[in-house]
Image (cartoon, rainbow, N blue to C red; front, top):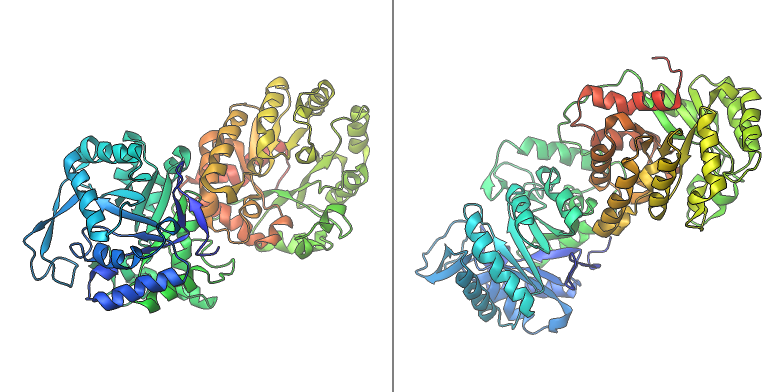
Length: 605
């Protein structure tokens, strides 16, 4: 991802670059900077192509705003996005030293979240900046002022937005819990979450980030370095603006993982937040041109798939080995399958045989697998797969191919049963994802075929896209005697961020409401793309858990397709990491129980 790529916030017209410049350091955070270096740093950020800048009256008692404005007031106003904060007024009576701020100021910040105080703060910020508007206004740290923030600050910002004086209403905090409360109390466009979705602290992912996805609130992730601890972990490093000892060892452990893969810890830290689809931008500070240049280089550093994807350094709850693991979705194929000729598939355009599969299952501790038709769309492939299953103990079942428009479907299914390995036929799949007719699953002959599959004691695997989920739900309701298995959670558009998540969640909820539907936690890494990490897929897994529950979920590697973006063990480990908060019984259900029950598998321990 390019640091200079722009993304829109929520439902607004405001755009920010993926990497934003947090201007607290140029206000003299911890150490003095001076006007000259501050100006050069803002200029450097501009020359690098960064176009989102965040400041606040608190930062240096107005120093940050004045120093930023000295540069930005000379730039084309339509080319950049600027945010500042409300909730503190600067009043005369500065002191030589203020907490955190190393440069003297003639002004002292005092809390004021009242309606009039916020309007005054906004006006005074514009004066210090030398500009006629800011694009985003954050309610700043209302930790002990929630009622005033809701009754005073929020209405003031909402009025400024309605008048067109600001483009987005936000709140910025170092905690996630109150941002959840604010999201439910008002119509916010974005939030700035500082230090609570990082390599060291993912507390923001528990409730806030899923809620933001649901409500279309964009998240600006600040504090990716946790005040410097993840930039350079050593004795005396800061965490939450204080010197921290207890977390240094954890940061050093993460750094050791990065070093094994020749990746700077700073790169892993700065890129981590954007793995979550609710996060629009990462906002990082810098106190000199060298630091802002380093921020951009770290943001665009190529990180191999093994780093950051298992969230190493975070203790997993409810872990432990499973006695039985069933990989409910893998394939085999030869290089001549027609669909493999498509651009971008060269990495998997080769033969994959049982000889390739067996050591992967063994190395990952997988007891058995379900071999799924691989898109050749002919009965010969299913016959070959059944023969392989007959000769291979760890292929516990086969989901074969059959056309839903086959007028002789009963005979086709009976013919499969009579083949060597026919007893291992557990399901049928047709490539519905490639059907353009939106009414296909509503056709009388298709519905009859689905009923025939269920009557034969087989499941029907749904390989569909998000736009086909509603039709799939209708088909499931119409054929209650057939068990449907949703492959790859309906192939959500993970790269589409919050919009894609909301679209998928609404659609998959209808299918989950059907009691005869179970789902596979599979294929998500491919949908996320080569820069996936655990946080990228976690919201989708969490939503599936909420909608289906562990008793209607199973796990699948989608190997060898997964090798486009991840190894076989990485694909399974990614899902397992998303399940770390579950009980042992719930994890066992997903790892094996649901697949064994749904596909009626005979699996040994």
